[in-house]
Image (cartoon, one colour):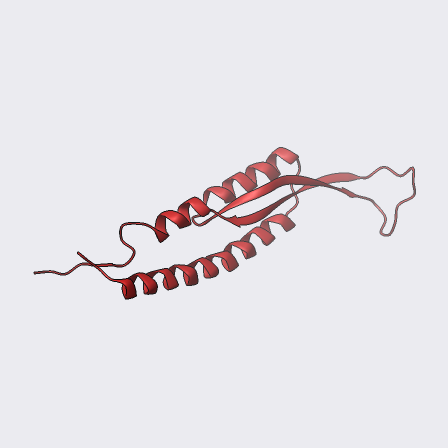
Length: 117
């Protein structure tokens, strides 16, 4: 194996490109998940946890569930009107998992070439 600075630069550039692509894709998926309404808060949290397990380069922070009241009639409800049903929407922020990125940036394969003899 031979180490090369040019190869390392190319590998890091490719990593940055892949991270940007992954961020766009995962933000889109998270946005879709956050628009879904769940019957209870536990279901919403479970959906976020399941989503987080599929992430490779990212992690979720600020995980919370927002309660949303639904009323029978459209418009602003009167003060004493009770909601007909309540749904729960998951909310979270997508952040880069720095430990995984650091491993790939400073890993043993960044900048190395295999030369067969």
